[in-house]
Amino acid sequence: MLVLSAFFSGSETALMTLNRYRLRHLVKLKHTGAIKAHRLLQRPDRLLGLILLGNQFANIFAASVTTVIAIRLYPEEESSIAIGAGLLTIAMLIFSEVTPKTLAAIKPELLAFPAAWIYTGLLKIFYPIVGFVNLFVNLLLRLGGINVKENGHETQLSKEELKSIITEAESLMPARYQKMLLGILDLESATVEDIMTPRNEIIGIDLEQSLEDIITQIKSSPHTQLPVYKKNIDRVVGFLHLRKVLVLVNHESFDKHTLTGLLSKPVFIPESTSVHSQMLSFKSEKSRIGLVVDEYGDVQGLVTLDDLLQEIVGELLTEDTTARQQSDGSYLVDANITVRELNRVTQWSLPTEGPKTLNGLIIEFMETIPEPGTSIKLHDHPLEILKRDENAVKLVKFLPRK
Image 1: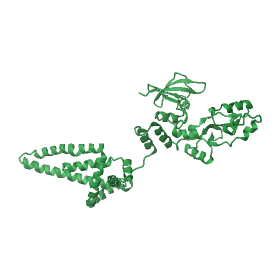
Image 2: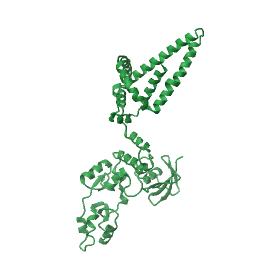
Image 3: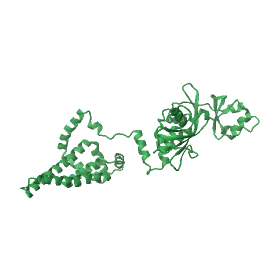
Image 4: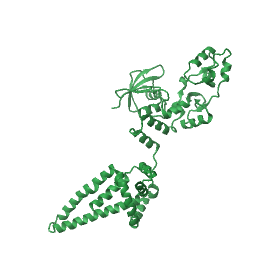
């Protein structure tokens, strides 16, 4: 009876602690034990009814046998039954509960798959008894508003739970792949406003400049496409692909009229557009660059297809130097970094609903532009302001959290 009770106790823990996603994987691989275990777990009320039926039978029978043995061995001792019950309790606790359940928690598949074969057969034999018990159990649960048939199936992972699994899978994949998967999961929640180059950092060609200055800018530009505008970026004329113009700039006939003839139509993107939607839009329109505008039509920034791809795969060309971890665990961070990118690099959870950059987050928190040497605790993260200019924080140092 002790062995039988150990089997029921251990197999119950093993079946209930099986990794459901590994179980599904084994089912796809046609593992027979996994298939039977998966079928049993589809109706946990029946499985638990069968297990507890067997367990209760073993425990009660063991107690009855112990009582009989105690009376026969020591018929004149009034305390013999109590002593027998005490010894049985210790024996069952060690051999039939703690030991098998600990083994099952550590190696669930070792017990669960063989037990699934046994329970499949036992369920057919004892189905009338199990069904009778479950009839009353399910009735009681329905009175509490719980439908066993509807709630017996496995719940799907939420996006946040899936992100936690990916974050914890350090030993299974390189860090760069983790960041890629996390970036993909964030595509729907991220908007172009989160990743755009802000208005004050847009590099473009002003048609009000002299032709010589424009040619010099074209020859020295590190970018392949530039917005062309008159006086300010709100009066954009179009986008210039440098590949089209570089072969013409040295011709004597080259002028501003020739340049404007090479421009492509500007693409305007609402600032609330999701990254995922904009990737599809770039694909359908066969474009790679656009200007982000607010509700009034004013240009707020610029976004490229490379920016969108970097949201998934990280920096494309060079290593990210905007947040560098130091040997003491601190971070030197360029305050122009977006909050989303900082969270991705450091695995923090700074709020992304308000300001999009670290500089904006600090200024909103302080309600002023802090001086160098100022130390604050920003959402439980201690930091020190290292550099600033007239209107923005430039460099900060995040100190290790204690």
